[in-house]
Image 1 (tube, rainbow, N blue to C red):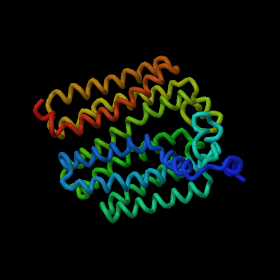
Image 2 (tube, rainbow, N blue to C red; image 1 turned 120 degrees about the horizontal axis):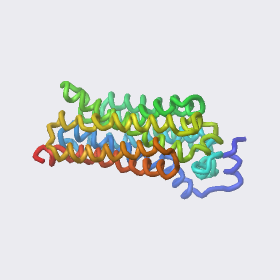
Image 3 (cartoon, rainbow, N blue to C red; image 1 turned 180 degrees about the vertical axis):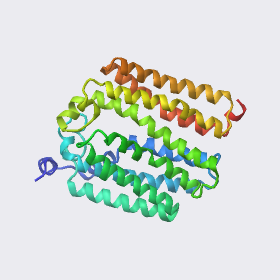
Image 4 (cartoon, helix red, strand yellow; image 1 turned 90 degrees about the horizontal axis):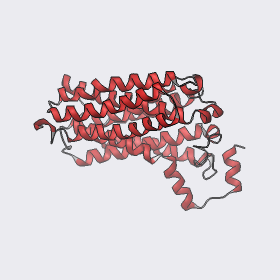
Length: 310
């Protein structure tokens, strides 16, 4: 009998609490961040708000379902290691608020429903990208977490996948070079952003990761130097990458100034973490990463309406 099943038998959970546990299982905070990148990518691909608002809502709904399935299966695969980490021990499975079969049924229903929904209501390309992202996250990234530090690289690719889903929802056939470059730039922004974000988390919870057998960089190389180097390199690359939309979208100097200040602020916190890897520096880096992505995508969203003239 699994640990989660044993706990479930000891502490029965009401249907209401079980429903809330399913919401927790979908990791709503992470899902909201992913949906933000979908929406912004779709708006940029449409050069403003999409003419068909329902199409955007369909894309968001289908993506939310597929993302919920990925989060659920990730927690099912990691249910034992989650139980050994204080930061994850209260998740629905290790806490005994859901059974294995409930989680598997939820995950199957949401990935099948979400993929079918995207295929029928949006397009086949977006549905295919959703399924590919789901596969990378669940069946490659998650198992790699206990095998190699390269798990972060794979996780960053999966994390940037929703950007392409949003783009293809609005523009399934990218016909111009500029459009292709813009889609690639948005993908790269989200891909690179994840390294400072992940390295800060990996440092703060390094002892818990070590106890759970996770092969995070801060566990394999506990001084934090390599994690710091990765955070700095990614943050440094984000400076020119985040400015490239100003060329493609022909923005004015205000966009350049704001994005440059934002990117340099994140680079500065990454350099500080590299210079002195400790918990306060990692928390600053984590906070900065949580500011950076919404702010960067918010500026991109405003660009067609504001920045060409400023």
